[in-house]
Length: 85
Image (cartoon, rainbow, N blue to C red; front, side, top):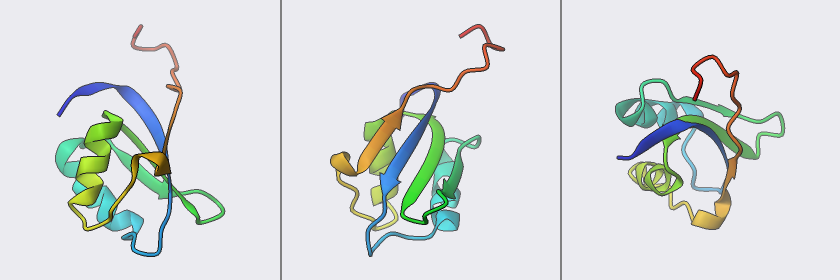
């Protein structure tokens, strides 16, 4: 899997999506620093990770959740500047 800067992804939820704890567990296997939660509406899963969007979709599909690329919005990097990256 390719790794880069940490990005935030927002994924529109579907009826067949697993809970954030299931996603956190599988994300931990590919990125131990990944963070998974739901937004306040409960309709969008947020994932902060250093994987690419293509790799993220592949990992999510391992859970049985069929995520379409158009469901995933990649937000700009939120950078504190501390790593000079």
